[in-house]
Image 1 (cartoon, helix red, strand yellow):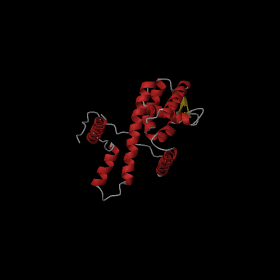
Image 2 (image 1 turned 180 degrees about the horizontal axis):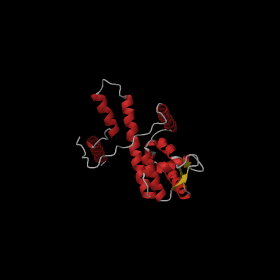
Image 3 (image 1 turned 60 degrees about the vertical axis):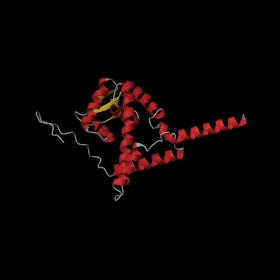
Image 4 (image 1 turned 90 degrees about the vertical axis):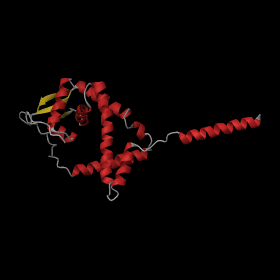
Length: 214
């Protein structure tokens, strides 16, 4: 009886071992695959800066998609519109900025800011006010309703960020060092950019012009 039990246990152990051997193993992530492919294809180059730029762009895209879905569902505006509200909020009371301050802070064109402000005004989250220091100009002001919405958005992002599950895999010290590194890279990069620079507006297509095929 004991021999039979031992044989059954051994057979079960062999089956489990065989199952582990045939089970699909987790492969590299897409970003890891990109890294391996580029390092193989261009091993003659120092690709660190090139790959870091890819990492930042992919990270921003993944966060932006989740952020946009939440804003659309909960507040009826896009993630880009919410960024205007966050820019107004972080400056503190009275939550007012010039359009110029907004497009420079958000790295978008003045035309894009105008459209975003239009949408925020239409839903009552922001309002335009005359700019006393600039004749004919205006200021963008966060309304009481807008302030309530942006406070809710900040609390959600702090508590339920799409980065949360990944960041939980790191120690507090690793997270701090990662944040410090990212801020230093951004600060150094921003210091090389002329503050008066504005992203170019998309060139308007002429009426009747056909889109050229690539």
